[in-house]
Image 1 (spheres, rainbow, N blue to C red):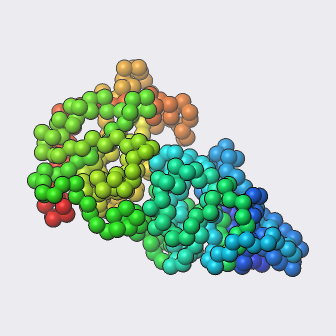
Image 2 (image 1 turned 180 degrees about the horizontal axis):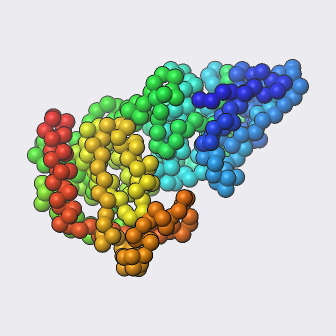
Image 3 (image 1 turned 90 degrees about the horizontal axis):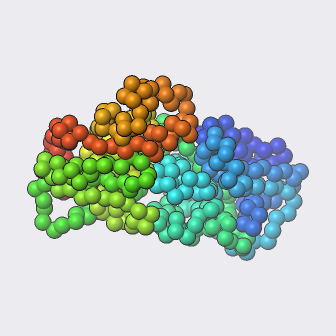
Length: 396
């Protein structure tokens, strides 16, 4: 974490704005929160001062950050009367960005939360103060939030009582896309430790097998996407059959916003392999056990984003990570564009340096895949060997 800069006139407030991904501020003393104005007050005899911060770790994305409500830190001779006393620090952040997208909920939320808690509050109880946390979000992630803190959550945009804390940190630390960098952690925590937190939250360390009798066939999760979203496996029925012919016990998994994460964890954590096309649902790969096989089907033009979104984290938590990069003939784009068109022939050149809306629409939304069954069957032979080896090691 970068150097914290003290605010002029108040030695108890410090803010670090040196990072590309995030800002973070600390109040190093008793503070009172008025949730109706999203303001933390610190009694200080020094001249009054104020800081504002948007506590969401996508600082570079100006359009998005304008939607994140500011939190104010105010120091002065007086503060509101305390109505609810908490004898622990507060950690304040917003989930008002890309909430609703499963990948972003981890990349912009739970992984930075893990980093921040273990960087600033190791082995301490804290109160989570969360802005823009809707009821469905709290319900969906209740068990995971409980793994971070046993204290009742304060919903910043719903509460009206003033709350007092021993100190407060506003903002979340991010190390980049789906990353925990142990060299930046004071206690050398890694992505494996984050994976351990998920296990604590959803299985309490126990692997839940779906059937009582041990199977002789490795269990494969085939991730399914709905039509209209793009990146659908158009011949999914045939892909499932080929996988079963290879020797897998196949479960087609199509998560919805209402899918129970405890049930999803139990299902995926008892599998030996997962196959799916690049997309937010592959965030469920976090539920795979280290040593199991994770195959990301990479459509045209998505090599870089496939690596940063899922490849990095898969390798960091000890999965046997593989990529099935489709050929042009396996992309639905071949029906719309000439095979010599730059869109097909050189997606990197077509995209240029950044992700334009046009490029995102083409590669992420317009593109579906139809796997070459002969080529995929040959590829599956390697996947099966690895998954069977993992199963035969006595991993369940």
